[in-house]
Every structure is written in structure tokens, then in C-alpha cells.
Image (cartoon, rainbow, N blue to C red; front, side, top):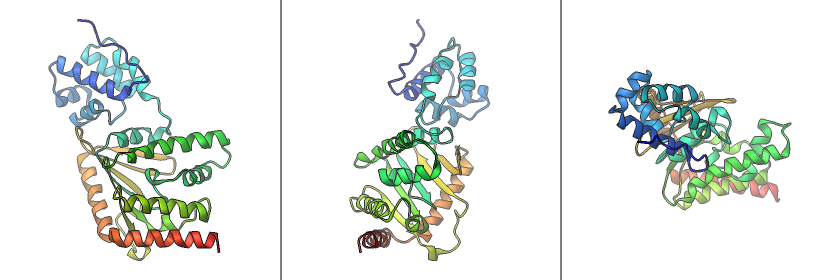
Length: 279
């Protein structure tokens, strides 16, 4: 029987690579756990590769070819799946985000990417790299706006965001940019496309003071959590860590304003920015 064909990089290579991995594993008569044991990873890790929620790295591809006898197929084709328009520390998280059925996110210092407007994203990226050429900034903005198209679907993924009030009050770009950004969030909330809560400054100390976090659930793969710092990020699938950070998110929700009061605050701040821009 002929081996699998090389993948076309234009046709969702991660999903195709995952499907080929599942085919090769089942052909070898191995469960996800059994294959994981041979590679010194968890069965859930194999499941994430097969579901396309985790990127296959070259070294992992090489070992898969050895264990499954696939004659270099995975090593050759993982290079196509590795191409990304996102920074290296965020690329796997962005890929997982696109496959998620539900996303829960806490944003302490800025409006998260899925809720950003082009003008807000431009201001953020310019702040990240003040010397970058304009065409590079626009490329980054286009990549971020492409992520927001996940919300074009009327119901999937479910997006639940807890915004720190500090992120809403930090003037980014200009008052006009902030007014547009907050009105955009309010519009998504009023259409029931996203669940938005604001963690008020009056809440004081809280469970996630050390940084942002994003929890992602999937239909055919275990949940993941992504947390990040300055120019760095980490995608984690350890069940105990995911459970702990899910509890952290639950604590944030409990400390936040209700969705109704949050919407009132977001719209009030948008009006403040608008009036101060145009007295």
C-alpha cells in the first residue's frame, strides 16, 4: 500500500498532519497512550497533535517517523504546518484558539486580541516596537484582525472575557481610539456574541495579579491554558495546572461586576472618551 501523500501547505496543514498521525497510529495498532509512552509524552499530547490544537515540532516529527515507520513523512511535512504569521511564543496558542469551542480569558493591562479594533491593535503594536517599519506594523495588525474573524460565527467559539478596569482606563492610541474600542466591546456584548465582565479597581487584590491567562476547551482534545509575559508565553496541558487556573478564572468571575453592570461601565467609559475627544 502506498504511503501518505505529502501535504499541501495551503490546505490547513496542521489538521491534515493530525489526521495522518491518527491514521498511522491506528495502522500501527497503538492507542494515544501507548504511542505517548514510546515518545515520553502523555496520551493527551498525542490527542492534541491529532486534533490540530498543538503544533508538531521537527524533533517530535522525526521520532514519530521512527516509531511509526512513516519514512520521513512527518518530518518533511511539519515544516509546512510550522509556518505562522504570529510571534513564535504565541503561534501555538493562536492555532489552538482557532480550534477551540470555548475560550475564557482574563486581561489585566490591555484589551485582548480577539476584542481589538484595527486602530487599537495598531497602537498596541507600535508601542511594542516603536522603530518597526510601517509595513511591518500593518502586517501585525492584519494578523490580529484575522484572529478576530473567529467571532464572525454567531455562536462558536463561546468567548468569556474578564477585563480589568485598568485595561479600560489605560489610554491606548488616543481617546478616539479608546472610544471606538470600548463601543466595539459593548456592541459584541449587546449582541450576546461575547460574555464580558469587568474586574473593578475596587475589587482590590485578586487571584490573577501576576498576569494574563487564557483557558481553551476543545471538542476532541483535552483543555489547554496559555499564560504570557513580556515577549514570552507558555501553552500548558497538565491537567492539574489547567484545573488550578480554571479555579483562578472562577475566582475572577466571582470578584467581577455582573455582565449587566460591566456593560454599563464599558459604555460609560466609552462616552467619557468620546466627550473628552469632542468637548
